[in-house]
View 1 (cartoon, rainbow, N blue to C red):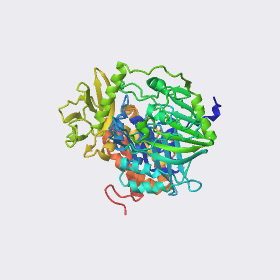
View 2 (view 1 turned 180 degrees about the horizontal axis):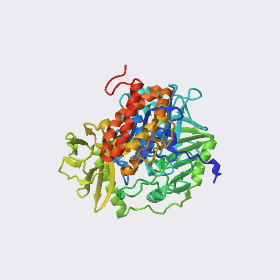
View 3 (view 1 turned 30 degrees about the vertical axis):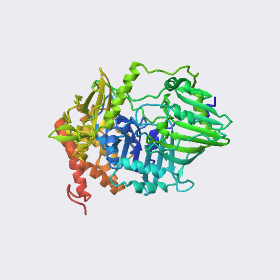
View 4 (view 1 turned 90 degrees about the vertical axis):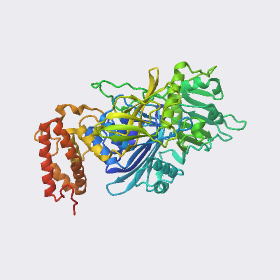
Length: 616
């Protein structure tokens, strides 16, 4: 239909998160409908500038990303939509501090926006902003998604209506300490934004679940209407016909499942096109054996990354003469999305002819479909899937779980002030099971207000709990947060990283901080391989990757302030790592003591205060 050169560029989502040279993230709030822990980890690595070319990172890179972004970053998702990984690394427990969930009842509405608002600061103290709006969730699934990246500029840009609404809503849901929603909204309102060539942003539309938003309707004289969405409904599509005698050319691109479901009701379109249905996280992943290898995270940023064929992009296009208007973002072609029953974000754009050609290149990649003569009727298997999805939504909406530490055991309780006696679904024969992040599932009986999750080591404690609803052996598994009282805090993080890194991993982390050269660390943070004794072997004399006295002095001479930050990390984590290594490998512990004495001597020589004392 069109030359391949007209296609829109394929860009990595992680690339849009990664700071530029000499930049650091001061604030980052990401919104998505669904997520998984592997992709959340990949996003943090990118935001910290610690991911490698494959979108992955080593244990030391992961630890540094968590330390760098703590208190600065939140990821806000719909409760009930945090996918369970097939094999969850134990250190993923620390990711709970970055996730907040919105508990909308999906029977009527959902938290569904996909956005990222990022504040950056460079070495000169200059601030810049990025705003991404699109259709991509924070999951490992590779689908055909779309996004718009806006960057701040000091000249040549313009303010954008609605940016402040987005910033305020994200800040309210993120609940980051020190970030006032009204202040963030006022700041973002005044930012000058630069859009991609051929794009003018008219406004950002943030809906608030009140159901009062106005659906875009083609005006009289519209010549072309294109709807692209993996989910559709008749009511929304019926509005996409302009009034008057002139008939617009109407095109619908969706999936075969949706075309079969609506059947003859799609007869008003001149062209029906289909792409594959989008890929979604495994509904009920079964754990792999301990020796199984965890696959690469598919959020990887690579020039050779294969584009998905599953349609997940959401677009609405109208052309009247030479005026081309495009809406893109999170909203499917449904009344629930566009009237504002869901919380959604879309960007309304005026686009050039070249951008329009990219849209038609997308249409040209799809399969032409004949109008079905009848609508699809769901079979028993589909109806059972829908019943379990309703059960998941009911558990998520009724969730009032809290974690209490009783000695070394975790107890999950349902808050007494909740409107529901428990989180259980309506159908009595659907089983609800719960577990800690990595523990065994235990049935939560309907009459019980609390559940004992058993012993959980300090370094594995997490506010994430695993849930499963099932009937006749068929189920759905996912993760949710249950706030801990008191919170696990940084003490848990220190214990987790001490076990995770070990002696060698800790020293590689220190070496990376001292060098600050972006070199890749060893290993993959999603693997629990460090338990092997061989990983603890240390040789300062023979291994150039371990920190040396010369590197320590050079780091201090080059940037004393940065060295003070490194010293704080070392003095925070070294005691915990040393305690952990003593239990695992006495030889490695002795080598780590050598480093500890060297560091303490260096601190004394540079005039740093003793631990527990303030430097004057």
